[in-house]
Length: 482
Image 1 (cartoon, one colour):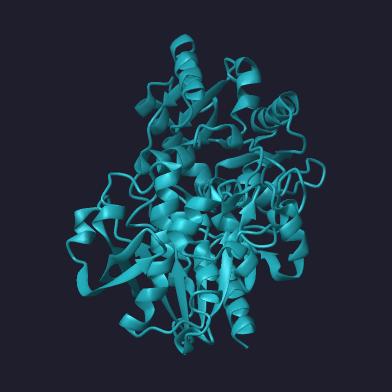
Image 2: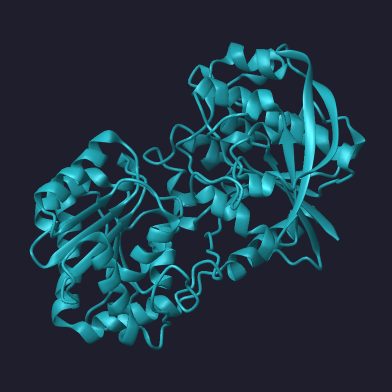
């Protein structure tokens, strides 16, 4: 039996702000339990719902030093078994008593420095010796650093390897070097350009990328992109130097959670064989719920997203007048930057028959939009993997995407002449190129409906469950352990 420890700042069903939580919540359950003992360590946020926190079992507590910040800081250990996985929660009210998992950048740097060190300190206490510690994103970037430095001479960790997975390179945990010295107790020579120093500051993620035994990210195209200056966020040189230790493995989705044949949030259940008989009814229910004209002939475009520049919303802003014509309905769900929230609210006000702006987030409504939309728009500037396009295909909503990162790896562009493909895509980050491909999709929907239905069917029959991706991770664990 090989021991694998996942370390992350969020995980469904306990706490979620983005796709990272979905991955950490789903992947461990799909690792073969006959060969791997997979456990997960998370912060014990007070924001975790009481239905879970109330069942956490106290295991132990101790005190550890934390650089020059604390000679002695409390570390509590809570345990909970859920869906066959053992979860440990690092308990410390000073750091984790808040309504949200993240706060100011300076405070987040401190609390995840504490978390990273506490993770390693906990392991001998719970008697779990990992063969691999699988770290996710910048919040866990100091785990490989501490493992190879402060804990280097400790026999308990002598066989432990580490993997650093990048979910989004844009977020790196950057702060000034003096603060990191104060918080970590690491020596000055660790903050050099070949180690943690980053543009005269220090980066937690860079530390993880330097010291981890292996690096993964969430699609092969993104793994290639981040080795270039345009996508590399200042770390492209390091990632290029470590290209032999870097690979992309596409994320999967939970096929039990996202399944139109068993979906509890929609009125009509359907699958790839009978969607023609039922999907238009789900669409009518969505239109009715959102106050849009109930008309199966309208082309319904969904957008479920954080409303930020990364998601390509500046492209939408340029051509939203042309997108929202009399034959189209545009349904938005999400929150984010004020200018985009206000833009969609404005267009709902002036075009109430064409635009429904839902500036909040509801998991149940998201499922109804996936099921009730004809197409799902994802014009991202960059997209490491993306889950929205995978979920939309599962529900028969055709993705319209920009060819970047995981969007390029998972959406096969429609070929009208060969009648192949699972969606529509455009290459350059350009509003009118996006508009052209939306109009092409509309033409197929309105004038070549059987071809459209073939696209839907092919997408619904694709397998983007965790089965294949989990197999790649298991092979990587075996190879790394040796």
